[in-house]
Length: 317
Ligand code: OOG
Ligand code: NI
Image 1 (tube, rainbow, N blue to C red):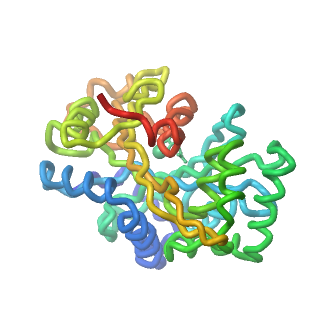
Image 2: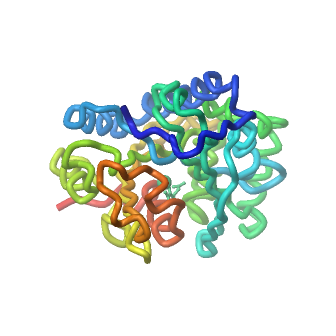
């Protein structure tokens, strides 16, 4: 069975009783994501064909517009209501973004496998610092967030349903945003959709548990990896290793009738190495909490590029 969270016997009361509802909601988000993103679906199947054991997700990620209650908090509420804890903030000044990550509740051992998802993933939620955008971009973003009414109160529901909380924008508005921020344009057409799931490579059983092997395997099977700053992103402490595919794109019907392809979602891989203080623990006794936790601004900055035009149009030689 996929790694269990057995280090705290303590039960989280806000999660108690609602765990099955909560897990079903995450699964619905995952289903929307898999149906829209053939690359993610194919890669999960490919990894499962080698590693027959159940695969674990390291984290799920979402994007938001940081304006009038539509930012990080709108999506975070669902997770904190079910026992997630807000952790460190990450800042990306050049991209005009900030993010928070959230750690899952400590659930009783017996419930660790309640969901088909395995242990609950970490959550990474970012927001565009809308106030820092040009007047034109702000106008578009404020128009659509306003059109959504109280949609921001139902971010998780929108994600599980796979629908936008605002009406379709025009192609001109999409292009205008894309010139200034590809993140903004992505969020305008994808809304609260699950942006990516991340496979926890160190919890795999085969040779693919080493992220270098997994990257090679993915590329050999004809998939393109995000090459921004190099395929493998390594944290300064050397303990958090990440890589990701380049996002799929599918056609989108804009309000003016134009049908154009827009970037959708990608899949990520993360290997968390054992912390120096636990380096003498035998390998088969190593638990998730013995490993490097959290996120890394330098890695994340490059992973954001998985939905960028540069990466989507890049030729692989
Ligand atoms: C998130 C990029 C950052 C990570 O694991 O550091 C990230 C995004 O593309 O929205 O996923
Ligand atoms: Ni990620």
